[in-house]
Image (tube, rainbow, N blue to C red; front, side, top):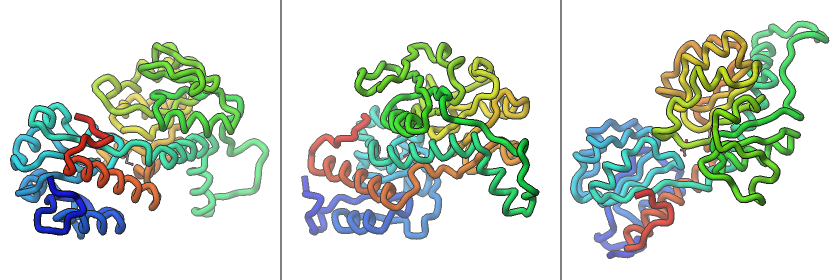
Length: 328
Ligand code: DGY
């Protein structure tokens, strides 16, 4: 197998579906016969299938829907799909495995950036950063008053974390510094030194009554899709705050919106949505939701690290090694 640094015509050909950070693209051009997307136009399935002609690999992002149908229609030459993301719910892993296509992702490098956004949402939703900011911008800031407007304290409150992987743990570390008490649900209990006093709930439902705040940090899977629904929200203490930096489809929008309207959920901080960017328009009308446009990993350093990690995975694969972040 040709080395990825071989400058001869035998460099593997890859399709890169979105414009990536400059240094990442420079590396891809150096090491691959890379078909870049300089205009950053959003490709549809047909664009990906035709763009993949004679390619050994695809470098995709969460905005590409890599369905079983698309995978089936890919040229036989495609043997690896490297996603520029930690999440891989946009790729049908089973279909890829059936075709013998390797799939990789980019864990670790976006942990801190995403946990920072979770904390921003948690504090912002609790203290009304969004409505406060709008009051100032829109000239609606009246005289300071002792009784209004008011937000919620976080110090001493209980934070339940759904999904205690790397990002969940990084959220816990930040929340501890704000004096919050950590509860968590995860498929597996963490080692005691990683728990750092957090209380484990083997049963998600059993954790809910302990969540003054609930942070969603799990992957979107068959088990977690729609997990935050009417029933689970009802089990939260009245006035709870929900934060989602994972995936929109873990939340049932009807249930959350109705709980935000009734006040059972006092506030929510959301960075991810069902059908984003075409989110449920009712969220825009609610004063008690702090909304961000999927900014979890959105810093230059993090995005570059994600691209480099995806390139590392491609390099390993084309050098005949199993990539460190292999999913199939
Ligand atoms: C990911 O990597 O899955 C993120 O959602 C992108 O920020």
